[in-house]
Amino acid sequence: MDVKSAVARAIAFLHEVYGEADLPGLRLEEVELSEDGALWHITLSFLAEVPPEERSRLDMVLDDIKPKPAARQYKILSVSSSTGKVHSMKIRVPA
Image (cartoon, rainbow, N blue to C red; front, side, top):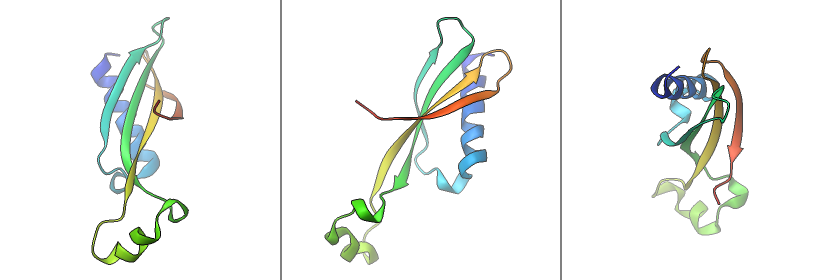
């Protein structure tokens, strides 16, 4: 499986898990083939609403006049280079 097909499969998997509407700002961040060539490690990111406990009081007061704050979330998906099956999805915390 080439890199474009692996990325497409990773994106399709995210849509299956989260739903298309829940992935605003979806973008490709990184792609890496494992040393043995068996897996593509694909990092995707999207915007997710900041949980209420992490929001400031000012953000809550301004909810009606400005968009709710969002934070970028990163996911690493491991996709088989031979079958296209997604083997894992992990949270990636940027350095």
